[in-house]
Length: 203
Image (tube, rainbow, N blue to C red; front, side, top):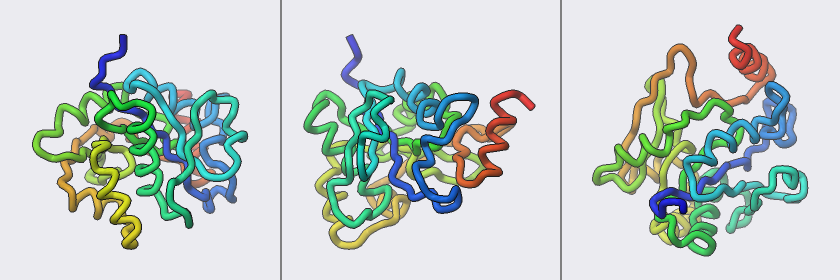
């Protein structure tokens, strides 16, 4: 039996990958597996279930066996819309999950204790975000499902900044060590992918 305290995991894959030449960045291969497969494998044991937030034809992600949920608002308003979609999915399909745990789907080296450390640091702050090397990672965060209506209203009013909106609700930051490697490095360029290959193989 899965403990009801576990969050729903939401893999955010809504970016346009312009610096990688377009296309679906999470489908790029690293060590023989896609970036998405790496992220999902790290996240799955920490969550009650996983969903993938992506727009367009969901069939391109069919091999992963995950529900693919599109933004619930039009116009591709960015990561906040994916977070909202995850909240709405959790409320409808996993009402036992009070939170969602979001990660960028192109982040292949996620810590195995990410969810536990974020939850432990919550305190009075409703939202808890990861930070490494002095930099906050607003898409790597724990979000209460109960904030969905407030988030939707903010999006409809034009809010697009993930960190700005989260800070306005009450935000705690959790530091993760960035040495010898940053656990939240994501793949934005061909050089990033080459560096990740070297890291994966210990070189």
